Image (cartoon, rainbow, N blue to C red; front, side, top):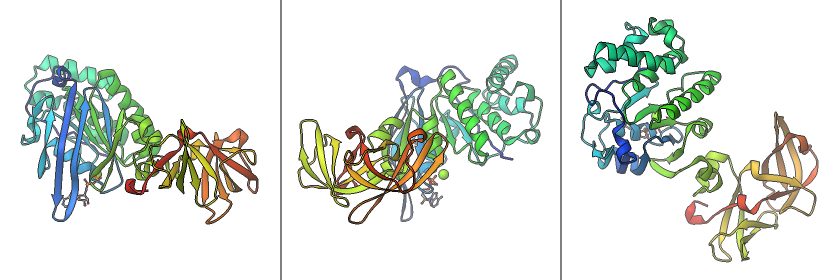
Amino acid sequence: MADFKVAVPSVGQAGGKPSATATGKALSVVALRKTYGDVVAVDEASMEIAAGEFVTFLGSSGSGKTTTLMMIAGFCEPDSGTITVGGSDVTRLAPQKRNLGFVFQQYLLFPHMTVHENVAFPLQLRGVGKSEIRRRVGETLEIAGLSKFAGRRPRELSGGQQQRVALCRALVYRPPVILMDEPLGALDKKLRDQLQIEIKTIQQELGLTVIYVTHDQEEALVLSDRIAVMRNGLIEQFDTPRELFERPKSPFVADFLGAANFLAGRIEQHTDQHTLVRLEECGGLLTARHHDLATGVAVKVAVQPGRLSVCAPGEGFCGGTVETATYVGTIVRAGVRVEGGDAPLLRLEVPAGRGPVTGERVDVSVDPEDVNLFTVEQGG
Ligand code: ADP
Ligand code: MG
């Protein structure tokens, strides 16, 4: 059973439309920094978030996600940097004056209040009239499919239902930005999948701006318009899911989002449209889309498992033996031991119908568009 709480801002505009839409910019953060002794929790984070955008901070534990969110919320004071909400500088404002909504995993709903009373609370604090409160609470509960639970107390609800109530309480006064820190972390996988879809649907229908924190790549991909991949307090890359997948700016991002295969190589030659890389381990020649790198430079080649294919001998950039082939529904996950040198293992995900079998000799190929190259300076 999970418990959730919406921290409730006590002042600010009593509902109405998000004020950010006038500028199109809901929130911006410039060079935000926070240290704890020697630990740099957040290192000069900068980003601009548009009104109506769903943005996720994605990173492993300790990467600075919560600290960044807490600074935006006003619960944690930055060492330096600025935070702007809807065009106004809120860096030194108290949390309740920022007019943001919060849904955090670790807080409780008010246990003695009914669902209706919990959701009505932020409106009461804002001095909204009784009939207007009834109307807006009713409307919000309806959106979240909670109308029939209005009279229940939190302990009479499941974890997922409590989480929905927390979401309603953050939504009810239409804050310009809603912050969520791992709100589904305590729920089981099935419920999490269901609530992800619900959160996304509500966000889109109401045009909400959401900043969401998670360490779960799949959750980030399902929910987000853009994802900030965080690492050691730094925003490693802030992009759309597609850009992060197809054009990662560092080996870290390629690995974190797609569990890329990495191969060592050297730039051999450029053609009009392509860059040819001589692979170190197997000696094969790999064709990548054009990369602006000097001939002879050492590179790390990154290819996602789903972008490699099995082909006839002689047609790929290298050959090998299928060491493992695991059927996982629509795809087969295969490990191909490349011939030569250090004999790296390439991980492939191929359609199950044409899946390779263990012990088979195969060649491996890839579309040049799907090859990313990194130099040593980029962490290669
Ligand atoms: P995440 O949410 O990504 O797991 P956090 O933002 O909670 O990461 O933490 C980032 C870093 O800052 C970690 O190294 C963490 O130990 C440190 N940190 C966070 N809060 C505090 C605190 N109150 N005191 C000391 N160190 C902290
Ligand atoms: Mg955290």
